[in-house]
Length: 207
Image (tube, rainbow, N blue to C red; front, top):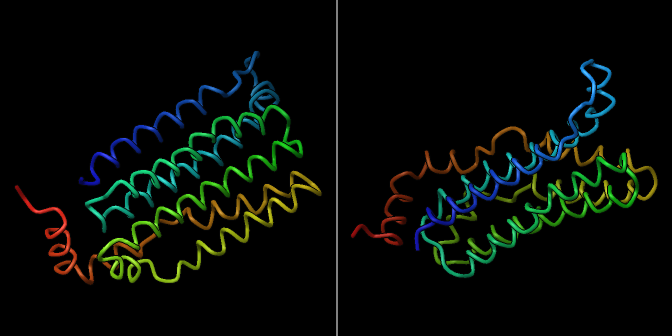
């Protein structure tokens, strides 16, 4: 099957995740800036962090399937595995906020981020091991940012056992690291446009 249905479903799930997160924000009971900061300040910060993460996955997910227009059942389940971890963001973000960044909620939030990152890596490798994966691997290269992100997630989890607030620092660094759009696929497509078009036509021939 083509990836269009998979992408449409994924886009819908990500939109719902963002909606659920914003609906979970506490509304200030007063009408002053102090009320906003006291009631919703931390919630807005944690929401922003999780929102950035969802945006990063949405953007990179789009790039991922520019090189793979056709998918099989294994790719579908790998994608669902990723959505499972992402769908936990509203829960772990709300718990982190309501407990004022307590130790266990911070660790659980970090595990959620790590789980999503590993699921995305599994999705990448599942696609790369399909026929034509050599071009896919060439486009993404060694994925230095991906490896660095996993190290930072583990560092954040370790720090969370000591000082929970410090544990959030590596998580923020990862978000900043990926905030700039990943141009690897775009560069590859510009350099190999005709080859990729021919490859895609073989996988998804016109009716």
